[in-house]
Picture 1: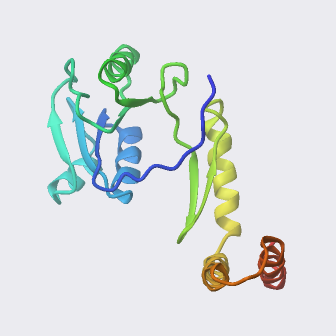
Picture 2: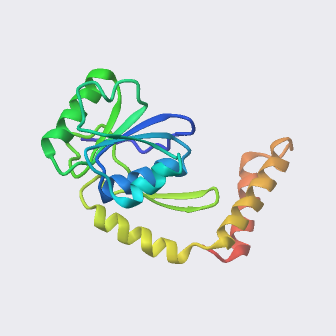
Picture 3: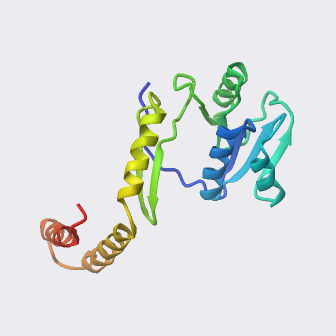
Length: 189
């Protein structure tokens, strides 16, 4: 299966997580960071998940997943320990036009989630196409120890110069030379 890398704006979008364990919790955290409206369906939940729900940051439905629960959501994550339930959520997603990520099953997933390193507006995604999440996570850890606030400052400087140069009569090649000079002077790459 071929996946196309893309970053989605989830702000204000309805997202569903099926499962109440540690993996589901990690998905919930990332969805909340993206300012999505999150609903979680599971017969049981981790204490961390319930703590977030108590703060009003997500909706929890303490029950089993039912047919068509996915309907109306922008995207969904099937994160249960029951492979049959996860496949059922994926089939429902297909039926109702909802993208579904099935944990540990790239063949059933309509999308995969990369490991992400975020430094302000600088975002680096790492994916192994679902073949080895551990390798993605290890690469992420390595990059996190490398990228610091200096990269955010460099990005901001390049953005400001780019905005100034947009209205200039300089050709594209001249603009690129200016950007490359700034990057080179930073000694970060």
